[in-house]
Amino acid sequence: DAGLTLAGVDAVAVACGPGLVGALLVGLAAAKGLAFAMGIPMVCVNHIEGHIYANFLAHALLEPPMLCLTVSGGHTELVAMHGHGRYQVLGRTRDDAAGEAFDKVARVMGLPYPGGPALERLARSGDPDAMAFPRAHVEGRPLDFSFSGLKTAVTNRLHTMEQKGAEIDAADVAASFQKAALGELVSRIEPGVRATGIRKLAVSGGVASNLALRAALDELAARLEIELFYPPLALCTDNAAMIASAGYYGLAGGRTSGLDANAVPGARLEDVSAALCREDTAACRRIISGVGASGA
Image (cartoon, rainbow, N blue to C red):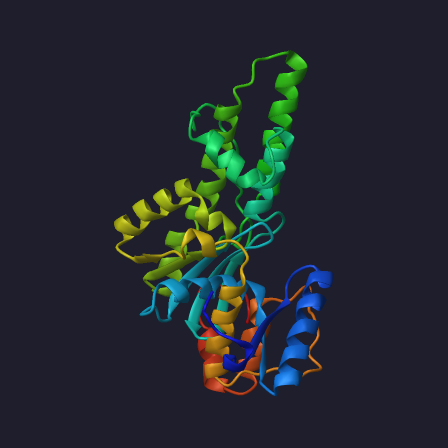
């Protein structure tokens, strides 16, 4: 798409985790082969970091510090980005990711794959106030997320209605679930702004393409008077460009990886910050300062 040949490539960026180990190893093997054959550096990128950097492809003047809400099928995190590669995780899901909850509820409802977009389309014709579903409150970590209880509540409601022979309005179920799930996401933003004082929010991940989520965040951003950024819809789901974007900024900051680098299926954003902290104590102090954050 960029019109480049291999001869014009200066470095190779690759996602080394988190994710499924088989997929990570295939990508890593290809990246190592290219880097070795061409004599160019390789940069290992955290997959969640890649989602964040999708925003930098669309917003050339975007710069940290900023809050980052990454919402996908595998991950849900609210992060304070203090600088390139410097992350403070304010909250993450304790169980299911938001996108995973969308997909699982869609599957229970018999919707086609991919379930999340199908459920969103169905919800547009439903009443979001038709059913009241619970939202989680996570003890001790108020900026963490939880979606397993919501998913179970919807599943149980559907099963109960089926057993009673009650008429099920699928659109109302979808709209009511979506309202609860998106409310869980949006409710963490204002406390995050208060805790950090950061007044920019970048949203990323597959669920960032949900138009109802965008509308809710647009309204919140206007009320809080904060800047709000999204990647284009095509860059919300997993893509190579976001990994290249993160790799570009990583390389500019001096990050490179050896050919002995391995896949890390359970990698966390804190791992990126920890590596920088070993080289920059002042940066480490900045990363771990703040309210309501997990250690980095």
